[in-house]
Image (tube, rainbow, N blue to C red; front, side):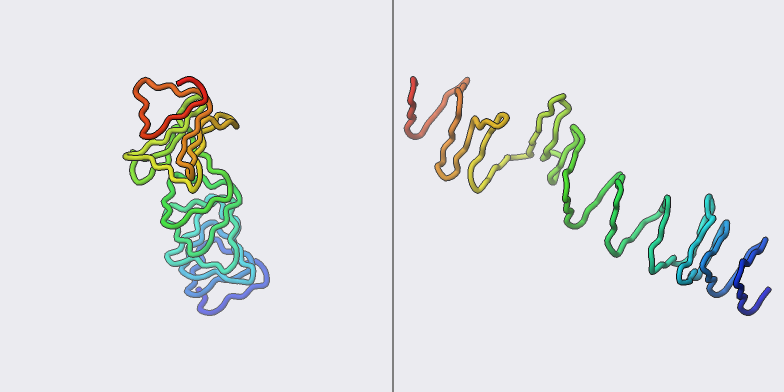
Length: 193
């Protein structure tokens, strides 16, 4: 049992426990199991040879520099006060975003999986067909309110267009109806009626 400071310019080895009421500092600290209530500090301190073992702290573990981990498993909550930069793939089972989400690239959603708006009755999704159909469903109305026109295209060809300023519907092709077609004003045609 030592009551003062132990200083060594080389290795310090023990076959039993080291218990300290103050700091343990060094450029490299090696151990099978480290249990600490204090900070490990040095200009470039590192913990090595901890494979299949634990670092246990009853207080905080703090670092002013970077921490490098091959694999990191956290079984409790993580509270991040700053930004997180992920260079690889983030595999997240569930995301709850309280603020704004910004995406700088494509978003891919699997077939038959929906984007819900307020309730499960109002959604957009692609069905499971080989050539997928886009399904748009609403609990009440579907309102299309562009500043200009609405176009319906097949490929690159426009077959129907709602002209906003002119209040016109223009259709290229035939109109087939199983019921009555009503008009509150004139009907003009360049062919048979």
